[in-house]
Amino acid sequence: MTIDVLFNRRWPKSSLSEDIAGIDVGTFSRAYVELMGAAPNRPLDRPYFVGHSGYPSTSNETNRREEHVAIAMVNGQQNWRLPNGTCFELLDYQVPLKATRSDREIGKIDIFGITANGQAVVVELKVIGHSGGASDPPPVALLEGMRYASIVEANLNRIADEVRETFGRTMVHEKPIVLVVGEADWWKSWLIKSKQTKKALENKAGEIAKALDLSIVFGFLTNVDVEYGTRSKAPRLLEFPKIEYPNELPKSSFVLSNARQISLTDHEASLQRHWWQYAIALPQENLDGNQKSGRPPVASPEAPSVNLMLPDDEVIAGKIESEIQPKDRHRHFRSFRSSQALAQSVFGEFKASGRMDLLSTIPAECGRPAFGAVTSDTSLSMEVDVHTLNEPRSTQLDVYLETDDYRVAVECKFCETEFGKCSRVRPQRSGSPLCDGNYTRQQDRQTRCALSEIGIRYWDLIPKYFAWDANEDHCPCPLLPSYQIVRNVLASIVKDDGGDCSSNGHPIFVYDARHPAYKPNGAADAQLRQAAEACRVPGLIRRVTWQEIARACEGTEEMAWLVEALSQKHGISAAH
Image (tube, rainbow, N blue to C red; front, top):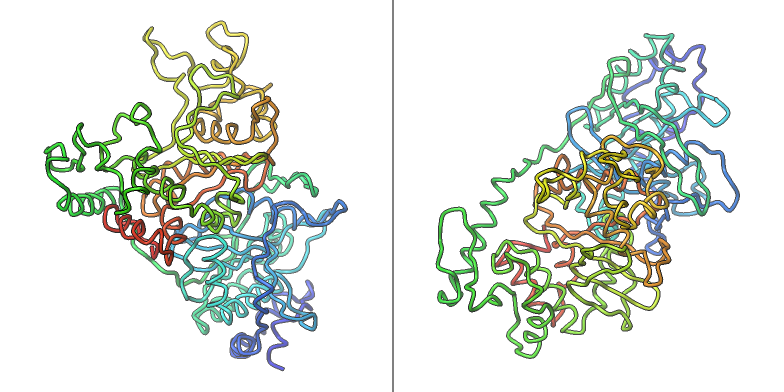
């Protein structure tokens, strides 16, 4: 069968360049198409994304280095780049493709990713083995990637649906990108002594890519120093690597979507249009009357609740309105830009309408439940002070979900362009900062942190959950950009008795999917990813969009008004 050429694993090193040069492009291209027609289709009760935990699944220690590297790369929740600058994320590892046991030659995708434009990325990962072996040669990696891409393309609708349901992401219906990525030593072991091998692989991959209109990319993984994991300890990359595309590798051939990236100015202008169109229908005496260009509508001091989205049902509306007391409102609560007013309207409705069960259906972007297992015993409170970290000024949680043994700290963002940073580096009343931004002993302190000096518990707990050693200097301090994120992590997992455990809870960060600051290269996105990279617990830091929350409300009688109000007032659409 023609398909069989895609399963060829016999590529002797002694004749590698000649064998690659002898590839018949027409045969291999036909094999790709034929495999699509014969591709296995997994039963509906056997998903492609099986809910990996971020830990090795075997009960015994495994030295499969490639597996540990793949898990650690996914756990890191980082942005990666393709040669043209397009960003992509890694969603899952060891993605099964078999439909039945008889599909013996069908393996698992090493890592499955998605670009910022929604195009699937099939990653074939190659590293030097635990014992130093060079693993498979490059053509085997290329053929594996092509096989998996063919099967993914054949099941594109089903996989796109699962990506939507599992990760809350929209996948476009385009051919997947094949990314063969190997660490430096793997590439060198095959190509360093043979420019002919590199040239032959480049030429044939390019011809196949052109024949199939398929993106084929070769990448170089740097600094792969992995700390092996166990069932209770997640694998970690000690220095997080990059994927590079040097001239020493075969040139990539790809055709990618080029969706226009919205700027912060465009985003703001879009919000302003929605806000002012919405405000026209409100009693004008309930607004402050200031229509200065570039300024959002603002409720009058006499009618601050006009900034809440409320249903016609007066009983439900009253419950939402009373969820946050006037004394707890933020300074800019009356502005249409207020994330607090948005959070009160949305989460207040879940509680007031008795539909908190819907929160359990919402996936975080890592595939785990965004809000955990919400039950009838779960309480929801807003603007909750946390008293477990010994802070003079308590961490205040926007939304707090709690059962007897689990808590979720919800941080809601809307127009904010970044997360809060440590205030000790800002000038104090004395005129001088209390910290120069480095985690070092300074200003005659006994401790490295100005917060630790006054008894705040952050650095007592941080080393257990983040790869930041409290007994070493850090320049700059890793807590500086991730301050608010880490506070919310600790607030969710430290119990009232002072004990802590990652199984006690997790934080979830809610944001607007359209906001450039939360997209790749955005300031807020970088803060979240810096914290996630250092986090020792897979999935402890979770994120979800307002759009995904709106999607959970679609089709429900009680929440239909909220879906409409979110779209009209803020342009937040479940279809985004």
